[in-house]
Length: 493
Image 1 (tube, rainbow, N blue to C red):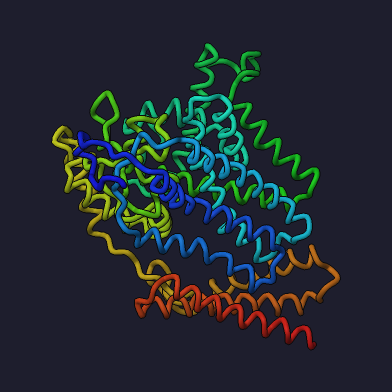
Image 2 (image 1 turned 180 degrees about the vertical axis):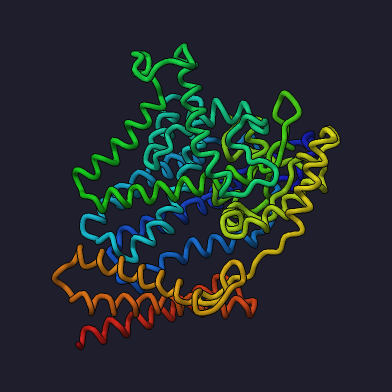
């Protein structure tokens, strides 16, 4: 039992839940295991043939499809629920991330770096590593030292331990203000935000720690720096990486870096849309200073992350107790769908965000905005809304400027051949005794052609307005068939 309300009715009496009702709420939150368990299954079953590896993309694709078309979840929490079942889930997710990193680097003691599995590390394991930051985020806001330490350890596995300092003592204090590096500015693209925020957040964390130790301008060689938590995180994260390199080899170290890079990209995609274009005008953080979503899948699959406005009102509140607020601007879809939108179709996101801010009179459209800033915002908004999202072009179609012809075809053919050559050299370096260079080049060309065909089949089915998951299942099924037949033919030869 829970009350379906949009948080303006905060005075409604709280219901009393029975244990079956509490259990059912907890079971729904088990959706948060989908991405890490899928990642672990990928690692436990590797190495994979090239036509099998891609099948592990399906669970993240199903999750993305579910989150992009999720039902609304606005039921209010019940504060009388026991915390321990939900705490146990958070601890399990933290343990899974540590196990996933261990399995990843162990896999690459027997797997080659130049393989389709490495691409899947970016997509499957990278998605799980990005998800692990949500778990760490929950832990670093807890009140006990051991939970905060566990959260910092999880962050170190993706080389983001400084997030602990910057997020808790920086972002939560400055959110929505011009000097907060984690608040995306009105009109800012994701790529521009990423280039700005990554070094700025690290610098902010460093300054915060130096200030805590007594001198914001202290030298790196000051003995007080031995207690600098940012340095501790660097030593832990990169120390782990170099131990992996020394003990397990270069390939294990490189995939460790790849999953950490993907985690960083996903973290900043979330930071980007959680406060895009908003400007705080009050001393205390208000619900209108953060974007929310009512996506059912984001709430249960990403441990309550959808209720970001309430998290900024009460940072120590556990995920299952976060509330919803009508005052917060609404994102157009769930978090997974938003990550895909802001990274791949950023203009679409900015158009929708401008319309929502204008409708709610938030951000630069607030009545409290000065005339110069309001005029600048109006100009930026009209510029964004007037742009047209370019259609996807085929590889040998017109380029970004609409040019086509022999020069474009030759340039792109040269790129394709360069990729094939680099892959073949890499594979031959790792497996010098299996095939000749010419045979390996031909096989790689065939594999690349099969993947190209898979993507074309997917796009052709999407044009028929079929479900995205169905399109991918058909396209990957075709790739699996081609790969199976290829393996059998090579076996006969």
